[in-house]
Image (cartoon, rainbow, N blue to C red):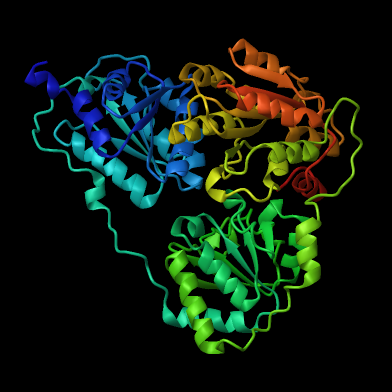
Length: 566
């Protein structure tokens, strides 16, 4: 290979991506990105995952980033390749996921190119950042900027590079300096002492305080500090959905906060006079539209708190600091103020509440179950009982998502969900991204919970799973419809036929892709079925014919408001 050929842009770009610690690329190739993808695949110690749809490349990269805390990287061609990812990008934006997408652009010097489109406004409309890499001299600067923005701002960045420029020679001979050399690491930001003192006064006098942990608390390692502070102040603990299970080992954990909160948790939050959110966004969903803790004084501890979020006031007091350091400072100040013997005013930790949290079910509503169908709540309990606690647990969205949100006892580091954009159809792609992150081969330890409608949206990725030799257990909650829509239509007195498609035999579809599949008619058979699954190396689909009459509490609440308005 000549020295000149080593400076072709696509080769230099592939090496620059590798220098950014990129070891996994999710891609669907076309003219605008195939040279880059082919070159990256030849680099040592890298994995290139060729998917069957561009959306799935970006969705898988999203899950990869969340599972590894690294930048997720995907690549698509120009024009129609780029337009296919416009649902995946805003999901990454709203979940604050660092992504870089290498996107081809139409040849800059071509007289005509039928896939040409102005890509920048399409991308920026999603909230993602777009970089037009049209300068050969600054090509490596563009790459470094993309990774820097993705990490510094925790957001998706699309770098668009014209097809013909990728095959041009780069004149620069400088060594690529990765973005990590320029990240502004100022250490953990510390809280303001006066704000800590105000929080301590509130903690000392609150009768029903509750601490909520979010993704920021998990990332900063604040869990134990929050437990210590809660125990000292007699506070209850809760967590946002993305970190489900954060405090499940604690006697006074309320579990998931927000719209998915249990009846017991809702009752506790209704009495709350102080809520301290640690590394949690306090979004519309966290507050359940402002109804969850209407009488509480709210404190937010976060590196970048927002005073106004989703049209609502976020909190009454803000500590702009690292989650762990803010909680530790509060605990230290409480100890200094109260000493070892003095108690706070808290009265919410009672034996009666502990008993409820240990024994009460999340939703006890009764429904008529058609013979031959299964209550999805019972189905999820059965799955939970057979899948080992340390497996990765990935979930899709839609109506079925409520039922798996109530599982308790699994570590938050092994749980992945992205719900911020409300998009269904991503579960299989997210599972693919986690499997790649864990480098799960034929003995993978991953379970995906998805609805039939969501799985069928991108069922083609079963071929990707088969081709890569990945093993996962896919549990499909099959109600033969789009669950959210049929319940809203029925509530409004309309026909549900436009959202009802019949109970597709998804277990047979799995077999058509060369995978294993079984329809679950008897939940008592799950232990034996799981043992058989665990002895072999192939992905398997369990098709659960669940009742379409069991309505999640979140859906019942939406319906009660009328016309399906959130």
